[in-house]
Image: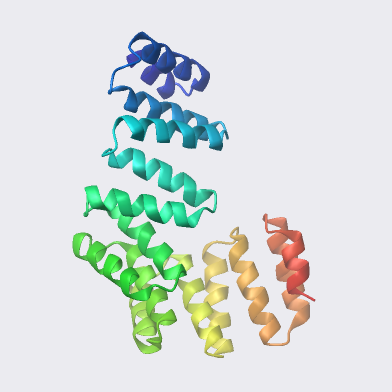
Length: 245
């Protein structure tokens, strides 16, 4: 196994996988093989073999059902594949083993918020912030949760405080701009989105956000220019064309 780990450090994925499989073949009945399945799954993920990676993680969990790290690996892959229900179950299983796992709390809170299960999402965000009071992602999540859960003043107060705390973080201006846009405060929203783009000029999402704002402001020429810029930075051209119809 040590040879495989060294090969991983050198980014020699095929060599590392071969070493791990040889180690597993040498003692196929060992419960410790769950760790080898985890390494192999991670390699398969990096190679784009997502189905094989899921199978490797599952085989590892069959050997060691209480391995939270394996649960998190599989849940994260489910999430990246858009299989949100399976991801949610995976993060819940991991939290049953380790209720203080910050990664699981953060992603489960996010998934619950998207499902509009605001009560459970709030509990996860609160637990996470008790464990890590300066966790910016959790604070942003709480802002978005409050905004969705009909607590607009609390949400705006919180995002204003975050902008003051992290004045160079572009995402915070983009989030506040979106909140202001929904409140039809178009000029201040434009100011915030301009600032987000100034801080991170290569972020396609920010141009998409400003394009939607320009459409609300009936400034279609500027919206079209932002949509074209977003496409140049990697946004989906068909989605941008649909936006401008």
